[in-house]
Structures are given as structure tokens and as C-alpha cells.
Amino acid sequence: MKKKILFLVIGCIFTVAALAVIQGYFIYNTYQLKAKEANLAINQELLKIETTGKLDTINKAWMRKTKKFLIDYEQGLVSKKDYEQLIAITADSLSLVMDKFIQQKGFFDEYDVSYINYVTEVTLSKPGMGTIDTLFTGKLKLFGNNTYNTPETQASQSRWNESTHDEECNPDPNATNFEVVTKRYYSISNWEKQVFIKMSGLLVFSVLLLTFVVLLFYFSIKNLITQKKIAEIKTDFINNITHEFQTPLAALDIAVTTLKKKEDELTAEQFNNSLAIIDRQNKRIQKLFGEVKEASLVSSDINTANAKHLGCEVINEITDDFAMLHPGISIRCKDDGATLHIDRFHLATILTNLLDNSVKYGATEVIVNLSNNKNATMVTVQDNGIGIPAAEQKAVFEKFYRVQKGNIHSTKGLGLGLYYVKQVIDAYKGNIWVEGAEGHGATFKFTIPK
Ligand code: ADP
Image (cartoon, rainbow, N blue to C red; front, side, top):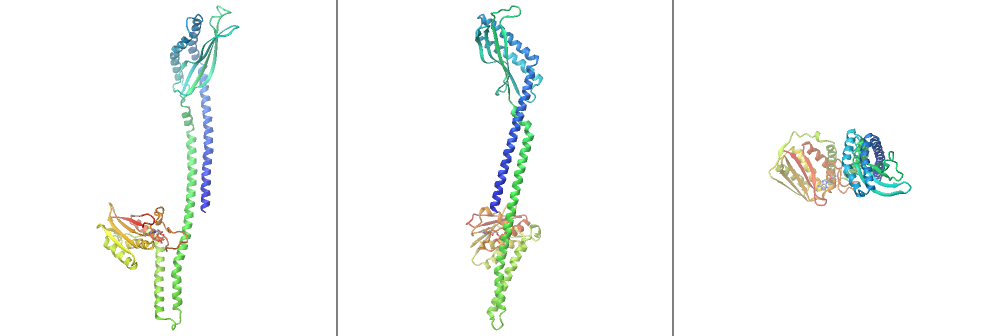
């Protein structure tokens, strides 16, 4: 059974992991798709910008200056370096115009897009001679801003070819031609965020679905383990009760066989012994039945109406009665003047059960302590027996729970005593718990409200 549960747990973990991977894969694909969609939408908007007359107007401004510069350059009036300066001066004002235009038209909606136009190459050539000079190569900003400093993607490229001389009015076969290559880039600072926002519904749904599956597995396995535990407890209980009844029934059998002897064969001693055995075993069987009957009671069945304030002297009466039956054990009660608000019969039931256990589980000395707490009175029953492993200290109050599980009958019991004690204490709205380490005695503590 343990193996089966282990396989089930491994199977569930594997299924959840596989589901998570498949979901992750779908989410990743959707993310890629949405990212592509976003890029496509932005590219379309860029195309719109590039086909508006506004861009022509802006372009004309730097083109005019470039042409004039190249005429001056041809004449040796300016140097290559001056071109970069010239473009830098115009770039700022053109960028401003471009930014305003993009903002006014609201091209990119929810995306934070930067649009930048660069001059990447300016070359001079003569007919029949090819390129004679390169004025500039690199990346010289014409206009636009990478406001968010994010990686740039190239959108488009154009080539502008012209001559330094006005060909229509004054055609010159030796005129110098020039070519300016410009490249437009864009960068988006928040596309991941926007894509995530668009996917948020899917993400939330996926997480919820996965959580639901995990919870479903968790509760199913938990339920299975509980069922298994109950089945084990039931088997243990049946084994225990069979064992518990075996001894008195065997003793009764012997006693009855003795009594069945013919009158002349039966001595007075044998008769008295047999009667004593029947009496003892009858009491034992009744006690066992009492335990089973008590365990069917729950706290709400227990009547607390006869509660009185009882002090250490009542505890001493109960422990003295107990000590008489167990001469080898020393029980001491200490108090600080505190009283316990409880029915005497219930107090006796609790203490007798706890003391019975102390003796049963190896104690030779028990100290009972009664003390005042803030809103309750606390009773401590501390013994020097075998103690209870920390991991089982909570479970010992469960019905049928025994630390010695399975078919081990080194100590007799049905696992009902502490359950009933807890029901009684619950009826008084008190608490019970156990402390101490295995091998170092057990300390049961319970509180009853004042
Ligand atoms: P049982 O009939 O088995 O004694 P109880 O409900 O009284 O049933 O106790 C539950 C289990 O708690 C016991 O089986 C025992 O293992 C453990 N236990 C209870 N009291 C003590 C104690 N004083 N010292 C050590 N173990 C104890």
C-alpha cells in the first residue's frame, strides 16, 4: 500500500510537471505570437509615418543643408568633420518636430516607441569614375530620439541620389553626384509589458488551472492516506480488543472448569480462588466495555453542570486511591492554592487515565501539579516513563491511536483513554497536550477555564 501511494505521488508530480511544461510551452508560443503581432502593428504605424507628407517636409530640411554643404565641400570651404556638426545642429530641432508629430497623431497607442532616422553613408561620385570620396560612414542621427535607450531595430532604408549642380537649369557632364544612405530605426521600451498585459488573462487562467490540479491531487492523496490510516487503525483496534479479551476469557474458562468439578473434588481454596478469578475478570471485562462505551461519547454528550472548584486535596484523594492499587509508584501533588472548576467524577476519570498510562508506560514516579494561569487553571501530570516521540505527541489524542502499532502487545490498550480524556476536557472548553522527549518521560498538561 505504501508503495502504491508512493507511485501515485510520483505519478501526480510527473503529471503536474508535464502539464506545467505543456502550459509553459503554449504560453511561450502565445507570447512569441503576440510579440510578432506587436511588431507588425508597430511596423504598419511606421509605414504610415513614412508615407505622410510631414516626413517629406522634415527630410527636405536636412537634404537642403546637405546639398549646400556638398557644394561648399567640393570647393574646399568645409571639411568632412563639419558635416557631422551641421547635422547635429539640425537634428535637435527636427527631432522636436518629429516627436510632436508622433505624439499628436498617437501612432503607437499603448507602445512606447522611439523612432530615429540616421545618415549611414554619404559618398561622392563622378560619371565614369565611380566613387571619388566618402564624406561619412557610420551612424549620424538626423532626427528622432531613442528616449528609453532600448535596443534599436531597423525599419527601412532609403538612398538619395543627386548632383551638386542643378542639372535642369545648368546641366554639367562633369558634375559631382552624391548619394546619401539613410536608415530608419525604431525601439520599443515596453513591448514585453504590453504583451504580458495582453496575455494576463491567459496567464491567470493557466496558474489557476494548475493550482486547481495540484490541489485536486493533494486532497485526493491526502484522502487516500487518511483512508489507509483509518483501515490500519481499525485493524489495530480489532487486534487489540481481541487480545484484551483473550486473557480474561481464558482465565474465566479455567475458573469455570474448576467450578464444574464434582463437589467432593473441589477444595474450599479452589472454590474461593475460582470465584476471585471470576470476580477479577468480570471487573476487567466491564472496564474494557466501559472504555469502549466512553469512547463513543463526544464532548457535547458530557454534562459539565456539576462542576465545582476543586483543589489539591481532592486530587490527593484521587491519587491516593490510585496509589493504593499501585504500591510501587510514588505520586505527589503540589499546588499554589489554585482550584480547578470541574466535576469530581470527570477529574477522577482524567487523572486515573493519565496515571494508568504513566504506570503502563514505565513510570515509577508521577508528579501532579496544580497552578494558576491567566484565565485558566493548569494541571501537569509529569512522569518518568518511556515518553512519547515528538512526532506522535499530537496524534495520541486521536481515537484508537497507539504509539505501539500493529500486532505489538507489549502494553495493553485500545488507544481510547486519551481520546476520552480529551473529550472530557473539550467539554469544559479546556486544552490538553503532551510534552517531553522520547525516553525522558511524558508531561501531560491540561487547562480548564476558571
Ligand atoms: P492506550 O490504551 O493505548 O494506552 P491511550 O489513548 O491511553 O491508549 O494512549 C494512547 C497512546 O499514547 C498509548 O498507546 C501510548 O503509546 C501513548 N501514551 C499515553 N500515555 C503515555 C505515557 N504516560 N507515557 C508514554 N506513552 C504514553
